[in-house]
View 1 (cartoon, rainbow, N blue to C red):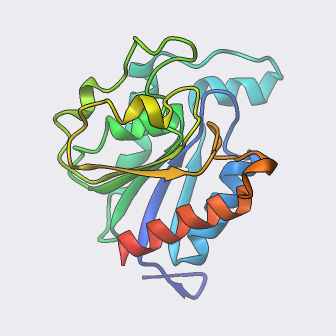
View 2 (spheres, rainbow, N blue to C red; view 1 turned 180 degrees about the vertical axis):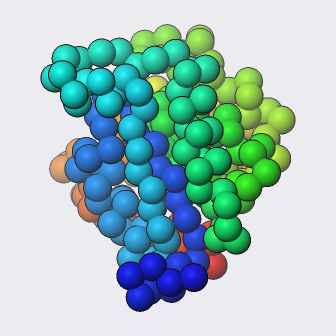
Length: 200
């Protein structure tokens, strides 16, 4: 299929995190990089974020059932042709994506900063739904992510379908400290290269 005269090899529905909408610099950068691979990237906003944008008030995210419902509506709107369909999400959006991988149209999921637990509450794990996951889920995680660090996550019993890709010294946005010798741009490029290799 051609879009704007370019061949499209897959479609990615990309969901935002809890605090920043679909136009955040992080999402903008990754969406543009994935588009350069020949992927059609669909960004959208959950209802609470749409209201935030309309009136300028800052609301907390809706509860997960409402988030899932909104995400599923977008999936169903784009699952009507033969283009391979993938889900992606930043943090909360990635958690929601991981809960929808059993949708029959979905090939795999990509998560950027999985919120394995709330900040400061490592005992409240959000991994139960991953145990029965069958489709590939690629999680790109900073080593010092406060919502799931390398030291914490390596102790979790995750299924083989969950593929963890660690970014050196990265935080929840995959951003390393300058002293690490790595850069945010390098980490985002690594993410895109892994996605490219997976899809190919």
